Amino acid sequence: MSSNRPLPSWREGSSRSALLSFLDRADELPEERRVAVFDNDGTLWCEKPNYTQLDFFVAELRQAVGNRPELGKRPEYAAILNGDRAALAELGLERLAPALMELFAGLRPEEFEERARDFIMKAEHPGLGVPYAQAIYQPMLELIELLRAHSFSTFIVSGGGTEFVRAVSRDLYGIDPEGVVGTLVMYEFVRQDGEPVLIRTGRLQGEANEGATKITNMQVHLGRRPILAAGNSAGDAEMLEYAAAGDPGLALLVDHDDSEREYEYASEAGTFEASEPILETARRLGWTVVSMRSEWDQVFL
Amino acid sequence: MSSNRPLPSWREGSSRSALLSFLDRADELPEERRVAVFDNDGTLWCEKPNYTQLDFFVAELRQAVGNRPELGKRPEYAAILNGDRAALAELGLERLAPALMELFAGLRPEEFEERARDFIMKAEHPGLGVPYAQAIYQPMLELIELLRAHSFSTFIVSGGGTEFVRAVSRDLYGIDPEGVVGTLVMYEFVRQDGEPVLIRTGRLQGEANEGATKITNMQVHLGRRPILAAGNSAGDAEMLEYAAAGDPGLALLVDHDDSEREYEYASEAGTFEASEPILETARRLGWTVVSMRSEWDQVFL
Image (cartoon, rainbow over all chains, first blue to last red; front, side, top):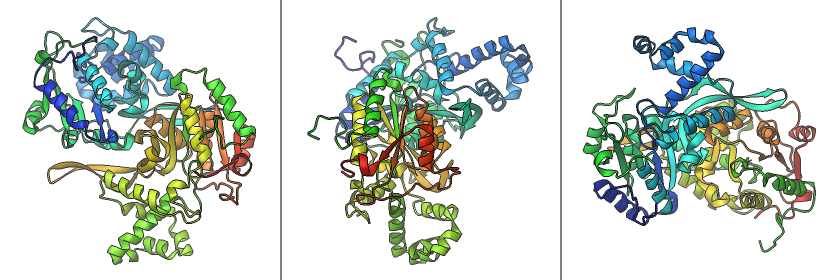
Protein backbone atom coordinates (compact mmCIF):
# COMPACT_ATOMS: atom_id res chain seq x y z
CA MET A 1 0.00 0.00 0.00
CA SER A 2 1.87 3.07 -1.08
CA SER A 3 -1.28 5.17 -0.92
CA ASN A 4 -1.74 7.40 2.10
CA ARG A 5 -5.49 7.36 1.75
CA PRO A 6 -6.89 5.17 4.52
CA LEU A 7 -8.70 2.01 3.36
CA PRO A 8 -7.25 2.30 -0.16
CA SER A 9 -9.26 -0.62 -1.61
CA TRP A 10 -12.55 0.81 -0.35
CA ARG A 11 -14.33 3.01 -2.86
CA GLU A 12 -15.92 6.22 -1.71
CA GLY A 13 -19.33 5.27 -0.44
CA SER A 14 -21.50 4.75 2.58
CA SER A 15 -19.49 1.90 4.12
CA ARG A 16 -16.16 3.69 3.91
CA SER A 17 -17.71 6.87 5.32
CA ALA A 18 -19.39 4.97 8.13
CA LEU A 19 -16.08 3.35 9.06
CA LEU A 20 -14.15 6.59 9.05
CA SER A 21 -16.68 8.49 11.13
CA PHE A 22 -16.91 5.57 13.55
CA LEU A 23 -13.13 5.72 13.98
CA ASP A 24 -13.30 9.44 14.67
CA ARG A 25 -15.69 8.78 17.52
CA ALA A 26 -13.79 5.74 18.81
CA ASP A 27 -10.65 7.87 19.12
CA GLU A 28 -12.32 9.54 22.10
CA LEU A 29 -12.65 6.28 24.04
CA PRO A 30 -10.07 4.82 26.43
CA GLU A 31 -7.95 2.33 24.50
CA GLU A 32 -9.19 -0.72 26.39
CA ARG A 33 -12.69 -0.09 25.03
CA ARG A 34 -11.49 -0.08 21.41
CA VAL A 35 -12.29 -3.67 20.56
CA ALA A 36 -13.17 -5.09 17.15
CA VAL A 37 -14.18 -8.65 16.30
CA PHE A 38 -14.32 -10.38 12.94
CA ASP A 39 -16.08 -13.46 11.77
CA ASN A 40 -13.76 -15.47 9.49
CA ASP A 41 -15.58 -17.54 6.83
CA GLY A 42 -17.12 -15.17 4.31
CA THR A 43 -15.91 -12.13 6.24
CA LEU A 44 -12.11 -12.36 6.16
CA TRP A 45 -11.68 -15.21 3.71
CA CYS A 46 -13.78 -16.77 0.97
CA GLU A 47 -16.22 -19.46 2.10
CA LYS A 48 -17.35 -20.68 -1.32
CA PRO A 49 -17.74 -23.16 -2.93
CA ASN A 50 -17.05 -24.84 0.45
CA TYR A 51 -15.80 -23.87 3.87
CA THR A 52 -12.00 -24.16 3.80
CA GLN A 53 -12.16 -26.36 6.85
CA LEU A 54 -14.50 -28.81 5.13
CA ASP A 55 -12.11 -29.04 2.18
CA PHE A 56 -9.30 -29.70 4.64
CA PHE A 57 -11.28 -32.41 6.43
CA VAL A 58 -12.10 -34.12 3.14
CA ALA A 59 -8.47 -33.97 1.99
CA GLU A 60 -7.43 -35.52 5.29
CA LEU A 61 -10.14 -38.15 4.95
CA ARG A 62 -8.89 -39.12 1.48
CA GLN A 63 -5.41 -39.53 2.82
CA ALA A 64 -6.56 -41.55 5.83
CA VAL A 65 -8.56 -43.87 3.59
CA GLY A 66 -5.55 -44.23 1.30
CA ASN A 67 -3.60 -45.55 4.25
CA ARG A 68 -6.42 -47.57 5.81
CA PRO A 69 -8.95 -48.50 3.10
CA GLU A 70 -11.34 -50.12 5.62
CA LEU A 71 -12.14 -46.61 6.89
CA GLY A 72 -13.90 -45.93 3.60
CA LYS A 73 -16.66 -48.34 4.56
CA ARG A 74 -17.88 -46.21 7.42
CA PRO A 75 -21.21 -44.78 6.18
CA GLU A 76 -20.33 -41.15 7.01
CA TYR A 77 -16.99 -41.35 5.22
CA ALA A 78 -18.43 -43.23 2.24
CA ALA A 79 -21.12 -40.61 1.78
CA ILE A 80 -18.57 -37.80 1.87
CA LEU A 81 -16.10 -39.48 -0.48
CA ASN A 82 -18.79 -40.41 -2.98
CA GLY A 83 -20.52 -37.05 -2.72
CA ASP A 84 -23.72 -39.04 -2.14
CA ARG A 85 -26.20 -36.22 -1.57
CA ALA A 86 -29.05 -38.42 -0.44
CA ALA A 87 -26.84 -40.21 2.11
CA LEU A 88 -25.31 -36.92 3.26
CA ALA A 89 -28.73 -35.40 3.81
CA GLU A 90 -29.92 -38.45 5.70
CA LEU A 91 -26.87 -38.61 7.96
CA GLY A 92 -27.01 -34.90 8.66
CA LEU A 93 -24.37 -32.66 10.12
CA GLU A 94 -24.86 -34.15 13.56
CA ARG A 95 -23.35 -37.43 12.37
CA LEU A 96 -20.97 -36.12 9.71
CA ALA A 97 -19.18 -33.50 11.78
CA PRO A 98 -18.23 -35.80 14.68
CA ALA A 99 -17.10 -38.47 12.22
CA LEU A 100 -14.75 -36.00 10.56
CA MET A 101 -13.48 -34.75 13.90
CA GLU A 102 -12.63 -38.29 14.92
CA LEU A 103 -10.04 -38.34 12.14
CA PHE A 104 -7.88 -36.11 14.32
CA ALA A 105 -8.47 -37.74 17.69
CA GLY A 106 -5.17 -38.62 19.33
CA LEU A 107 -3.17 -35.85 17.64
CA ARG A 108 -1.21 -33.35 19.67
CA PRO A 109 -2.26 -29.74 19.08
CA GLU A 110 0.99 -28.95 17.27
CA GLU A 111 0.47 -31.82 14.85
CA PHE A 112 -3.04 -30.69 13.99
CA GLU A 113 -1.85 -27.12 13.59
CA GLU A 114 0.93 -28.11 11.23
CA ARG A 115 -1.40 -30.07 8.97
CA ALA A 116 -3.96 -27.26 8.94
CA ARG A 117 -1.33 -24.64 8.19
CA ASP A 118 0.15 -26.75 5.44
CA PHE A 119 -3.24 -27.14 3.78
CA ILE A 120 -4.27 -23.49 3.99
CA MET A 121 -0.89 -22.27 2.77
CA LYS A 122 -0.39 -24.72 -0.09
CA ALA A 123 -3.60 -26.38 -1.28
CA GLU A 124 -5.32 -24.69 -4.17
CA HIS A 125 -8.71 -23.06 -3.75
CA PRO A 126 -11.05 -24.91 -6.16
CA GLY A 127 -12.68 -21.81 -7.59
CA LEU A 128 -9.96 -19.17 -7.54
CA GLY A 129 -6.86 -21.04 -8.68
CA VAL A 130 -4.68 -19.70 -5.85
CA PRO A 131 -3.80 -21.16 -2.44
CA TYR A 132 -6.50 -20.74 0.19
CA ALA A 133 -4.13 -18.39 1.99
CA GLN A 134 -4.65 -15.91 -0.83
CA ALA A 135 -8.44 -16.16 -0.91
CA ILE A 136 -8.50 -13.37 1.65
CA TYR A 137 -10.21 -10.03 1.32
CA GLN A 138 -7.72 -7.21 0.90
CA PRO A 139 -10.19 -4.52 2.05
CA MET A 140 -10.75 -6.35 5.34
CA LEU A 141 -7.00 -6.60 5.96
CA GLU A 142 -6.81 -2.87 5.43
CA LEU A 143 -9.61 -2.37 7.91
CA ILE A 144 -7.81 -4.50 10.53
CA GLU A 145 -4.65 -2.52 9.93
CA LEU A 146 -6.44 0.81 10.25
CA LEU A 147 -8.19 -0.28 13.44
CA ARG A 148 -4.83 -1.20 14.95
CA ALA A 149 -3.45 2.18 13.92
CA HIS A 150 -6.30 3.59 16.02
CA SER A 151 -5.19 1.43 18.98
CA PHE A 152 -7.92 -1.15 18.59
CA SER A 153 -7.48 -4.72 19.77
CA THR A 154 -8.62 -7.04 17.00
CA PHE A 155 -9.98 -10.54 17.45
CA ILE A 156 -11.48 -13.34 15.37
CA VAL A 157 -14.77 -14.86 16.49
CA SER A 158 -15.44 -17.68 14.06
CA GLY A 159 -17.86 -20.56 13.74
CA GLY A 160 -14.90 -22.59 12.46
CA GLY A 161 -12.61 -24.70 14.59
CA THR A 162 -10.50 -22.58 16.91
CA GLU A 163 -7.29 -24.46 16.18
CA PHE A 164 -7.89 -24.48 12.43
CA VAL A 165 -8.03 -20.69 12.39
CA ARG A 166 -5.25 -20.27 14.94
CA ALA A 167 -2.92 -22.27 12.72
CA VAL A 168 -2.74 -19.30 10.35
CA SER A 169 -4.16 -16.34 12.29
CA ARG A 170 -0.75 -14.86 12.97
CA ASP A 171 0.53 -15.25 9.44
CA LEU A 172 -2.62 -14.15 7.66
CA TYR A 173 -4.09 -11.56 10.00
CA GLY A 174 -1.43 -10.74 12.59
CA ILE A 175 -3.71 -12.09 15.33
CA ASP A 176 -2.17 -14.20 18.10
CA PRO A 177 -3.67 -17.62 18.95
CA GLU A 178 -5.30 -16.32 22.14
CA GLY A 179 -7.15 -13.74 20.02
CA VAL A 180 -9.07 -16.44 18.14
CA VAL A 181 -12.38 -17.70 19.51
CA GLY A 182 -14.04 -20.51 17.61
CA THR A 183 -15.66 -23.87 17.99
CA LEU A 184 -13.65 -25.93 20.43
CA VAL A 185 -12.59 -29.52 20.58
CA MET A 186 -11.92 -31.19 23.93
CA TYR A 187 -8.45 -32.19 25.00
CA GLU A 188 -7.09 -34.79 27.31
CA PHE A 189 -3.95 -34.51 29.38
CA VAL A 190 -2.02 -37.77 29.40
CA ARG A 191 1.48 -39.06 30.02
CA GLN A 192 3.06 -40.86 27.07
CA ASP A 193 6.33 -42.62 27.94
CA GLY A 194 6.55 -40.40 30.98
CA GLU A 195 6.14 -37.22 28.92
CA PRO A 196 3.17 -34.98 29.77
CA VAL A 197 1.22 -34.28 26.58
CA LEU A 198 -2.12 -32.97 25.42
CA ILE A 199 -4.09 -34.90 22.86
CA ARG A 200 -7.19 -34.03 20.87
CA THR A 201 -10.34 -36.01 21.48
CA GLY A 202 -13.09 -36.38 18.88
CA ARG A 203 -15.56 -34.44 21.00
CA LEU A 204 -16.65 -30.81 20.95
CA GLN A 205 -16.45 -28.65 24.05
CA GLY A 206 -19.73 -26.80 24.33
CA GLU A 207 -21.73 -25.77 21.30
CA ALA A 208 -20.65 -24.62 17.87
CA ASN A 209 -19.55 -21.00 18.07
CA GLU A 210 -22.49 -19.41 16.30
CA GLY A 211 -25.30 -17.05 17.20
CA ALA A 212 -25.63 -16.04 20.85
CA THR A 213 -22.84 -18.50 21.69
CA LYS A 214 -20.43 -16.13 19.93
CA ILE A 215 -21.27 -13.53 22.54
CA THR A 216 -20.95 -15.70 25.62
CA ASN A 217 -17.72 -17.14 24.22
CA MET A 218 -16.32 -13.65 23.63
CA GLN A 219 -16.91 -12.85 27.27
CA VAL A 220 -15.47 -16.13 28.47
CA HIS A 221 -12.41 -16.16 26.22
CA LEU A 222 -11.62 -12.52 25.72
CA GLY A 223 -13.40 -10.68 28.51
CA ARG A 224 -14.00 -7.82 26.08
CA ARG A 225 -17.03 -6.16 24.64
CA PRO A 226 -16.67 -5.23 20.98
CA ILE A 227 -17.78 -1.89 19.58
CA LEU A 228 -17.17 -3.02 16.02
CA ALA A 229 -18.18 -6.41 14.65
CA ALA A 230 -17.95 -7.65 11.07
CA GLY A 231 -19.81 -10.68 9.79
CA ASN A 232 -21.75 -12.00 6.86
CA SER A 233 -24.20 -14.65 7.94
CA ALA A 234 -27.07 -15.47 10.25
CA GLY A 235 -24.62 -16.96 12.76
CA ASP A 236 -23.17 -13.46 13.18
CA ALA A 237 -26.46 -11.67 13.84
CA GLU A 238 -26.27 -11.53 17.64
CA MET A 239 -22.61 -10.49 17.59
CA LEU A 240 -23.42 -7.67 15.17
CA GLU A 241 -26.39 -6.57 17.25
CA TYR A 242 -24.24 -6.61 20.40
CA ALA A 243 -21.52 -4.45 18.85
CA ALA A 244 -24.04 -2.06 17.29
CA ALA A 245 -25.41 -1.35 20.79
CA GLY A 246 -22.07 0.23 21.72
CA ASP A 247 -21.63 3.97 21.87
CA PRO A 248 -20.17 4.35 19.35
CA GLY A 249 -20.94 0.96 17.86
CA LEU A 250 -20.67 -0.35 14.33
CA ALA A 251 -22.02 -3.54 12.75
CA LEU A 252 -20.56 -4.35 9.35
CA LEU A 253 -22.28 -6.91 7.15
CA VAL A 254 -20.39 -8.15 4.08
CA ASP A 255 -22.85 -8.72 1.24
CA HIS A 256 -21.64 -11.31 -1.26
CA ASP A 257 -23.10 -9.72 -4.38
CA ASP A 258 -20.11 -10.05 -6.70
CA SER A 259 -20.58 -13.00 -9.04
CA GLU A 260 -17.68 -11.90 -11.24
CA ARG A 261 -14.85 -11.42 -8.80
CA GLU A 262 -16.11 -13.66 -6.00
CA TYR A 263 -19.50 -15.33 -5.51
CA GLU A 264 -23.05 -14.09 -5.37
CA TYR A 265 -25.16 -15.66 -2.66
CA ALA A 266 -27.53 -14.85 0.13
CA SER A 267 -26.36 -16.02 3.52
CA GLU A 268 -28.19 -19.11 4.63
CA ALA A 269 -29.74 -19.37 8.02
CA GLY A 270 -27.76 -22.52 8.61
CA THR A 271 -28.76 -24.22 11.81
CA PHE A 272 -30.09 -21.01 13.29
CA GLU A 273 -33.57 -19.82 13.62
CA ALA A 274 -33.63 -16.82 11.39
CA SER A 275 -37.02 -15.29 10.95
CA GLU A 276 -35.72 -13.13 8.12
CA PRO A 277 -32.75 -12.98 5.74
CA ILE A 278 -29.74 -11.35 7.43
CA LEU A 279 -29.80 -8.54 4.85
CA GLU A 280 -33.27 -7.62 6.04
CA THR A 281 -32.13 -7.66 9.65
CA ALA A 282 -29.24 -5.40 8.69
CA ARG A 283 -31.56 -2.88 7.03
CA ARG A 284 -34.06 -2.99 9.86
CA LEU A 285 -31.39 -2.38 12.49
CA GLY A 286 -29.38 0.15 10.51
CA TRP A 287 -26.21 -1.92 10.14
CA THR A 288 -23.58 -0.96 7.59
CA VAL A 289 -23.96 -3.26 4.58
CA VAL A 290 -20.86 -3.59 2.42
CA SER A 291 -21.58 -4.29 -1.21
CA MET A 292 -18.56 -6.25 -2.35
CA ARG A 293 -19.38 -5.53 -5.98
CA SER A 294 -19.75 -1.79 -5.77
CA GLU A 295 -17.70 -0.79 -2.72
CA TRP A 296 -14.52 -2.86 -3.02
CA ASP A 297 -12.02 -1.75 -5.62
CA GLN A 298 -10.01 -4.90 -5.10
CA VAL A 299 -11.40 -8.08 -3.56
CA PHE A 300 -8.49 -10.42 -2.93
CA LEU A 301 -4.86 -9.92 -1.87
CA MET B 1 14.07 0.29 39.46
CA SER B 2 17.17 2.32 39.04
CA SER B 3 19.41 -0.75 39.10
CA ASN B 4 20.56 -2.18 35.80
CA ARG B 5 21.06 -5.61 37.28
CA PRO B 6 18.25 -7.83 36.03
CA LEU B 7 15.87 -9.15 38.70
CA PRO B 8 17.09 -6.60 41.27
CA SER B 9 15.03 -8.01 44.15
CA TRP B 10 16.35 -11.53 43.62
CA ARG B 11 19.43 -12.35 45.65
CA GLU B 12 22.28 -14.23 44.05
CA GLY B 13 21.36 -17.88 44.32
CA SER B 14 20.15 -20.96 42.54
CA SER B 15 16.75 -19.57 41.48
CA ARG B 16 18.11 -16.37 40.00
CA SER B 17 20.84 -18.30 38.18
CA ALA B 18 18.35 -20.82 36.86
CA LEU B 19 16.13 -18.02 35.53
CA LEU B 20 18.97 -16.20 33.83
CA SER B 21 20.38 -19.28 32.15
CA PHE B 22 16.89 -20.31 31.07
CA LEU B 23 16.46 -16.90 29.43
CA ASP B 24 19.78 -17.31 27.62
CA ARG B 25 18.52 -20.51 26.08
CA ALA B 26 15.03 -19.15 25.36
CA ASP B 27 16.57 -16.30 23.37
CA GLU B 28 17.37 -18.90 20.69
CA LEU B 29 13.74 -19.85 20.18
CA PRO B 30 11.31 -18.23 17.74
CA GLU B 31 9.34 -15.60 19.62
CA GLU B 32 6.02 -17.40 19.37
CA ARG B 33 7.44 -20.24 21.47
CA ARG B 34 8.44 -17.89 24.28
CA VAL B 35 5.44 -18.35 26.50
CA ALA B 36 5.29 -18.03 30.29
CA VAL B 37 2.31 -18.69 32.57
CA PHE B 38 1.77 -17.69 36.18
CA ASP B 39 -0.55 -18.95 38.82
CA ASN B 40 -1.98 -16.01 40.77
CA ASP B 41 -2.88 -16.82 44.42
CA GLY B 42 0.34 -17.43 46.33
CA THR B 43 2.44 -16.93 43.20
CA LEU B 44 1.82 -13.33 42.15
CA TRP B 45 -0.13 -12.11 45.15
CA CYS B 46 -0.47 -13.15 48.76
CA GLU B 47 -3.09 -15.84 49.45
CA LYS B 48 -3.02 -15.74 53.25
CA PRO B 49 -4.80 -15.57 55.62
CA ASN B 50 -7.55 -16.06 52.98
CA TYR B 51 -7.86 -16.03 49.24
CA THR B 52 -8.54 -12.44 48.20
CA GLN B 53 -11.57 -13.62 46.29
CA LEU B 54 -13.06 -15.24 49.37
CA ASP B 55 -12.62 -12.00 51.31
CA PHE B 56 -14.34 -10.19 48.45
CA PHE B 57 -17.23 -12.65 48.41
CA VAL B 58 -17.70 -12.31 52.17
CA ALA B 59 -17.62 -8.51 51.97
CA GLU B 60 -20.25 -8.64 49.25
CA LEU B 61 -22.29 -11.07 51.30
CA ARG B 62 -22.25 -8.71 54.30
CA GLN B 63 -23.44 -5.88 52.13
CA ALA B 64 -26.17 -7.99 50.53
CA VAL B 65 -27.42 -9.11 53.92
CA GLY B 66 -27.36 -5.51 55.11
CA ASN B 67 -29.77 -4.66 52.30
CA ARG B 68 -31.84 -7.82 52.51
CA PRO B 69 -31.59 -9.31 56.01
CA GLU B 70 -33.64 -12.39 55.09
CA LEU B 71 -30.64 -13.58 53.03
CA GLY B 72 -28.76 -14.14 56.28
CA LYS B 73 -31.03 -17.05 57.13
CA ARG B 74 -29.79 -19.16 54.29
CA PRO B 75 -27.67 -21.87 55.97
CA GLU B 76 -24.62 -21.33 53.74
CA TYR B 77 -24.62 -17.58 54.31
CA ALA B 78 -25.28 -17.93 58.04
CA ALA B 79 -22.36 -20.31 58.42
CA ILE B 80 -20.04 -17.93 56.60
CA LEU B 81 -21.15 -14.81 58.45
CA ASN B 82 -20.93 -16.50 61.84
CA GLY B 83 -17.66 -18.21 61.03
CA ASP B 84 -19.32 -21.40 62.21
CA ARG B 85 -16.58 -23.94 61.53
CA ALA B 86 -18.69 -27.01 62.16
CA ALA B 87 -21.43 -25.80 59.81
CA LEU B 88 -18.87 -24.73 57.19
CA ALA B 89 -17.23 -28.14 57.30
CA GLU B 90 -20.54 -29.91 57.02
CA LEU B 91 -21.77 -27.81 54.10
CA GLY B 92 -18.48 -28.18 52.26
CA LEU B 93 -17.13 -26.19 49.36
CA GLU B 94 -19.59 -27.83 46.99
CA ARG B 95 -22.47 -25.99 48.66
CA LEU B 96 -20.66 -22.85 49.82
CA ALA B 97 -19.06 -21.87 46.53
CA PRO B 98 -22.26 -21.96 44.44
CA ALA B 99 -24.11 -20.05 47.16
CA LEU B 100 -21.52 -17.29 47.05
CA MET B 101 -21.55 -17.23 43.26
CA GLU B 102 -25.31 -16.76 43.30
CA LEU B 103 -24.76 -13.39 44.95
CA PHE B 104 -23.61 -12.10 41.58
CA ALA B 105 -26.14 -13.79 39.33
CA GLY B 106 -27.87 -11.24 37.14
CA LEU B 107 -24.96 -8.79 37.05
CA ARG B 108 -23.47 -7.62 33.79
CA PRO B 109 -19.76 -8.43 33.43
CA GLU B 110 -18.81 -4.75 33.72
CA GLU B 111 -20.69 -4.41 37.01
CA PHE B 112 -18.95 -7.42 38.53
CA GLU B 113 -15.59 -6.18 37.28
CA GLU B 114 -16.09 -2.77 38.83
CA ARG B 115 -16.96 -4.20 42.23
CA ALA B 116 -14.01 -6.59 42.13
CA ARG B 117 -11.60 -3.87 41.07
CA ASP B 118 -12.88 -1.55 43.75
CA PHE B 119 -12.34 -4.18 46.44
CA ILE B 120 -8.85 -5.21 45.34
CA MET B 121 -7.70 -1.64 44.93
CA LYS B 122 -9.17 -0.20 48.13
CA ALA B 123 -9.97 -2.82 50.77
CA GLU B 124 -7.27 -3.46 53.32
CA HIS B 125 -5.48 -6.78 53.48
CA PRO B 126 -6.21 -8.17 56.97
CA GLY B 127 -2.63 -9.23 57.68
CA LEU B 128 -0.49 -6.69 55.90
CA GLY B 129 -2.23 -3.39 56.54
CA VAL B 130 -2.10 -2.31 52.89
CA PRO B 131 -4.66 -2.61 50.09
CA TYR B 132 -4.79 -6.05 48.49
CA ALA B 133 -3.42 -4.41 45.34
CA GLN B 134 -0.13 -3.97 47.17
CA ALA B 135 0.07 -7.49 48.53
CA ILE B 136 1.90 -8.42 45.34
CA TYR B 137 5.34 -9.92 45.04
CA GLN B 138 7.83 -7.42 43.69
CA PRO B 139 10.29 -10.14 42.54
CA MET B 140 7.58 -11.77 40.40
CA LEU B 141 6.71 -8.46 38.76
CA GLU B 142 10.40 -8.09 37.92
CA LEU B 143 10.37 -11.57 36.43
CA ILE B 144 7.34 -10.75 34.25
CA GLU B 145 9.04 -7.57 33.13
CA LEU B 146 12.27 -9.36 32.28
CA LEU B 147 10.42 -12.09 30.37
CA ARG B 148 8.69 -9.43 28.28
CA ALA B 149 12.04 -7.78 27.59
CA HIS B 150 13.04 -11.18 26.19
CA SER B 151 9.94 -11.14 23.94
CA PHE B 152 7.93 -13.58 26.03
CA SER B 153 4.15 -13.56 26.02
CA THR B 154 2.98 -13.70 29.63
CA PHE B 155 -0.31 -15.14 30.85
CA ILE B 156 -2.10 -15.84 34.13
CA VAL B 157 -3.52 -19.32 34.68
CA SER B 158 -5.32 -19.12 37.99
CA GLY B 159 -7.65 -21.30 40.02
CA GLY B 160 -9.49 -18.09 40.90
CA GLY B 161 -12.41 -16.65 39.00
CA THR B 162 -11.40 -15.43 35.56
CA GLU B 163 -13.30 -12.16 35.82
CA PHE B 164 -12.07 -11.47 39.33
CA VAL B 165 -8.47 -11.60 38.14
CA ARG B 166 -9.20 -9.84 34.85
CA ALA B 167 -10.65 -6.90 36.76
CA VAL B 168 -7.10 -5.93 37.80
CA SER B 169 -4.78 -7.92 35.53
CA ARG B 170 -3.98 -4.95 33.35
CA ASP B 171 -3.38 -2.54 36.21
CA LEU B 172 -1.42 -4.91 38.42
CA TYR B 173 0.45 -7.08 35.92
CA GLY B 174 0.09 -5.47 32.50
CA ILE B 175 -1.80 -8.52 31.26
CA ASP B 176 -4.84 -8.01 29.03
CA PRO B 177 -8.15 -9.71 29.91
CA GLU B 178 -7.76 -12.31 27.16
CA GLY B 179 -4.46 -13.34 28.75
CA VAL B 180 -6.19 -14.50 31.93
CA VAL B 181 -7.42 -18.09 32.20
CA GLY B 182 -9.28 -19.02 35.37
CA THR B 183 -12.37 -20.66 36.69
CA LEU B 184 -15.31 -19.60 34.57
CA VAL B 185 -18.86 -18.64 35.30
CA MET B 186 -21.56 -19.15 32.68
CA TYR B 187 -23.24 -16.23 30.98
CA GLU B 188 -26.58 -15.74 29.39
CA PHE B 189 -27.33 -13.48 26.46
CA VAL B 190 -30.63 -11.68 26.93
CA ARG B 191 -32.44 -8.61 25.70
CA GLN B 192 -33.40 -6.11 28.40
CA ASP B 193 -35.68 -3.32 27.18
CA GLY B 194 -34.57 -4.16 23.67
CA GLU B 195 -30.88 -3.84 24.55
CA PRO B 196 -28.71 -6.93 23.99
CA VAL B 197 -26.81 -7.67 27.21
CA LEU B 198 -24.83 -10.43 28.84
CA ILE B 199 -25.61 -11.41 32.40
CA ARG B 200 -23.81 -13.67 34.86
CA THR B 201 -25.51 -16.82 36.00
CA GLY B 202 -24.71 -18.55 39.29
CA ARG B 203 -23.29 -21.59 37.53
CA LEU B 204 -19.72 -22.58 36.72
CA GLN B 205 -18.69 -23.43 33.18
CA GLY B 206 -16.67 -26.62 33.37
CA GLU B 207 -14.51 -27.49 36.33
CA ALA B 208 -12.46 -25.31 38.62
CA ASN B 209 -9.24 -24.35 36.88
CA GLU B 210 -6.84 -26.52 38.84
CA GLY B 211 -4.59 -29.47 38.15
CA ALA B 212 -4.77 -31.00 34.67
CA THR B 213 -7.67 -28.65 33.87
CA LYS B 214 -5.16 -25.80 33.86
CA ILE B 215 -3.44 -27.48 30.95
CA THR B 216 -6.48 -28.22 28.85
CA ASN B 217 -7.78 -24.70 29.55
CA MET B 218 -4.47 -23.18 28.46
CA GLN B 219 -4.80 -24.97 25.14
CA VAL B 220 -8.44 -24.03 24.73
CA HIS B 221 -8.10 -20.38 25.75
CA LEU B 222 -4.60 -19.47 24.71
CA GLY B 223 -3.54 -22.08 22.17
CA ARG B 224 -0.03 -21.81 23.57
CA ARG B 225 2.35 -24.20 25.24
CA PRO B 226 4.35 -22.61 28.07
CA ILE B 227 8.06 -23.20 28.53
CA LEU B 228 8.05 -21.41 31.86
CA ALA B 229 5.42 -21.89 34.54
CA ALA B 230 5.36 -20.48 38.05
CA GLY B 231 3.13 -21.79 40.82
CA ASN B 232 3.04 -22.63 44.48
CA SER B 233 0.48 -25.31 45.19
CA ALA B 234 -0.69 -28.78 44.34
CA GLY B 235 -3.16 -27.33 41.83
CA ASP B 236 -0.18 -26.11 39.81
CA ALA B 237 1.68 -29.42 39.68
CA GLU B 238 0.57 -30.53 36.20
CA MET B 239 1.16 -27.06 34.73
CA LEU B 240 4.66 -27.00 36.18
CA GLU B 241 5.38 -30.49 34.90
CA TYR B 242 4.10 -29.54 31.45
CA ALA B 243 6.31 -26.45 31.22
CA ALA B 244 9.34 -28.30 32.59
CA ALA B 245 9.07 -30.76 29.69
CA GLY B 246 9.85 -27.94 27.27
CA ASP B 247 13.28 -27.56 25.74
CA PRO B 248 14.29 -25.34 27.38
CA GLY B 249 11.65 -25.57 30.09
CA LEU B 250 11.51 -24.14 33.58
CA ALA B 251 9.17 -24.87 36.49
CA LEU B 252 9.32 -22.35 39.30
CA LEU B 253 7.79 -23.24 42.66
CA VAL B 254 7.39 -20.41 45.19
CA ASP B 255 8.04 -21.78 48.69
CA HIS B 256 6.28 -19.81 51.40
CA ASP B 257 8.93 -20.13 54.09
CA ASP B 258 9.00 -16.54 55.30
CA SER B 259 7.04 -16.19 58.54
CA GLU B 260 8.43 -12.74 59.19
CA ARG B 261 7.80 -10.89 55.97
CA GLU B 262 4.93 -13.01 54.62
CA TYR B 263 3.60 -16.36 55.85
CA GLU B 264 5.11 -19.74 56.42
CA TYR B 265 3.03 -22.65 55.22
CA ALA B 266 3.16 -25.81 53.23
CA SER B 267 0.86 -25.86 50.24
CA GLU B 268 -2.17 -27.97 50.92
CA ALA B 269 -3.31 -30.59 48.52
CA GLY B 270 -6.72 -28.95 48.44
CA THR B 271 -9.22 -30.97 46.47
CA PHE B 272 -6.51 -32.72 44.49
CA GLU B 273 -5.09 -36.12 44.89
CA ALA B 274 -1.56 -35.39 45.88
CA SER B 275 0.45 -38.40 46.84
CA GLU B 276 3.21 -36.21 48.18
CA PRO B 277 3.74 -32.61 49.28
CA ILE B 278 4.41 -30.34 46.30
CA LEU B 279 7.87 -29.53 47.62
CA GLU B 280 8.76 -33.20 47.37
CA THR B 281 7.44 -33.34 43.83
CA ALA B 282 9.54 -30.30 42.99
CA ARG B 283 12.69 -31.91 44.35
CA ARG B 284 11.99 -35.23 42.68
CA LEU B 285 11.42 -33.60 39.29
CA GLY B 286 14.20 -31.03 39.54
CA TRP B 287 12.01 -27.92 39.56
CA THR B 288 13.41 -24.59 40.66
CA VAL B 289 12.25 -23.95 44.23
CA VAL B 290 12.27 -20.29 45.26
CA SER B 291 12.84 -19.75 48.95
CA MET B 292 11.01 -16.53 49.68
CA ARG B 293 12.94 -16.08 52.90
CA SER B 294 16.45 -16.51 51.57
CA GLU B 295 16.18 -15.59 47.88
CA TRP B 296 13.98 -12.50 47.84
CA ASP B 297 15.55 -9.27 48.96
CA GLN B 298 12.19 -7.55 48.94
CA VAL B 299 8.87 -9.39 49.08
CA PHE B 300 6.12 -6.85 48.40
CA LEU B 301 5.85 -3.81 46.14
